[in-house]
Length: 75
Image: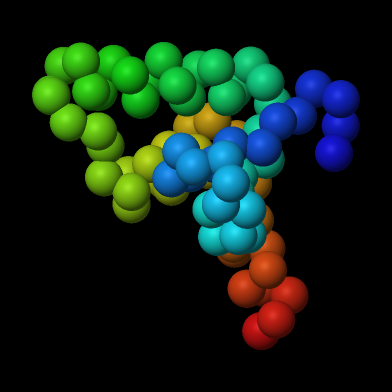
């Protein structure tokens, strides 16, 4: 990992280090993601669906979903 990268735990549990629960992204994008996530909770009274989170992590916040990387290597 680069010094400016962080690991985001998709389900929020830092002890869950399965590849399917991890996303590598820049610290700036991670902060932006959490602002988006919190705004959804505040506006709609619920957290975004996991499927929506995964799309946003990858497409809008430039995250690398480790679960996808592991599946590509295995296949």
